[in-house]
Length: 467
Image (cartoon, rainbow, N blue to C red; front, side):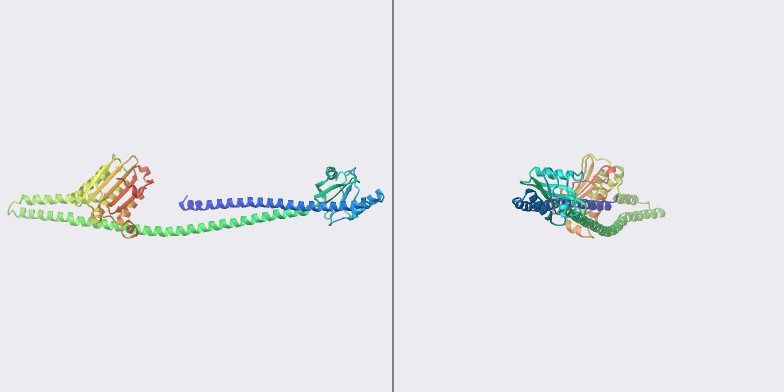
């Protein structure tokens, strides 16, 4: 999986998980609030209906109490009471019902003059259970009873709430009821509103998630284009540096060949031609000194060629390893007398991958060149340290140092330092430079194991340059 795809997934998945969690939480909280609202509304409606039913029954009791206090015949008074209750209707579906102490229905649909009204009759199998509930509650002292019953206006069976009590003196059970279908409809409206709110919230969350994904995609595209431009610019600069380094190396080799090897060979050729002329003319014996000078010049040419070859790549680096090659390079620099330089080996030297040895050798070579040409150093120490898993190269001088920030900002200067860093980081190592008035310190650390040459060296900071 590509790195950019991994980054896209890592940035998208947490947002999707967070929005999903928000959606689940919002749904849960909305349902919880809707349930609480439902319970509150239901309790309020039921309380209102219970209060209304009690008022109706109390009103009926008051009217019956006045009739009961009359001096007329008891049967006539009961007939007047039933006729009064039959006329006391409220709303389209509100009416009173009356039972005697044996549970017989005393007020039925015929007395009320209503069609489609069925009273709860304990003797009717269809209404035996509700009638028994009503009578049982009345014997307990009265109260609320809930049961399903047919609503007259709609002929549908809906929940009904009734309030029953007893009539003192006559031992009647009097009650009335209200249908709760309007409460159920209100509760269903609350449920629908909650579901609509949940749906709207989820749609908004999905829209936010889609917008976030689109924004992440656009940001990733912009970042990709920006990185592509930066990478292209870096590649162009790298190609220019490679070409520039090649040209510099060619110029250096050509200059050393011209100023060293060619001059020595020309002088050797001149001496040998002179000896040849004298030998051909037999005017005088060939001076031995002239032949010795010619051979010495040829020997110097061989040494110069060997020096140039060693500068390109020392044979000791391939034959004996990094430590002898660095020791030889330090010895040659010391013989030039520019500054005092010493080589220090810490730990037993061991085998290294070819790429590692070459990179460290070139870094030491570049560091010594910088110390000679730019630092004005008087002393330089080249330290090579071997541990069990790593090898580190430290080059320290006491020169005047340089401004690290200025060099890093300068896109044209500091090519040698950037080349050193790229060599080490390209092999998975760590490279650090610390420079100041006390001099410059360069540290390069690599893994000794060839199979882990690309592994990093975590935890290194420029301040951790070993002593």
